[in-house]
Image 1 (cartoon, one colour):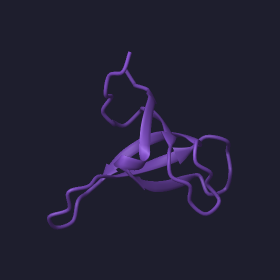
Image 2 (cartoon, rainbow, N blue to C red):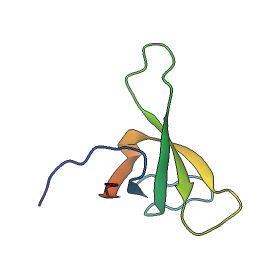
Image 3 (cartoon, rainbow, N blue to C red):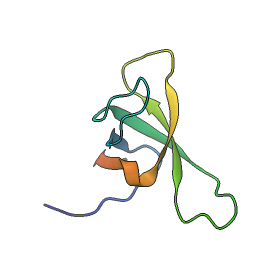
Image 4 (cartoon, one colour):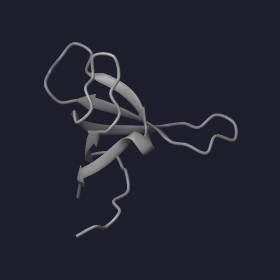
Length: 72
């Protein structure tokens, strides 16, 4: 089962690119798509990290996210 899933609010995703304080492989909930500025050909998504830390909301490029569970 190797189908491509699309990002949308409510999906659970795995973060594939590490950032300061956020290791690769971390699970997050997609909250919303951030509005594009200009002629950008990429998508930025706002996420809520699972685990309850203080820095719970982050933004990531769509290419750095892997959908693991879609919302209904």
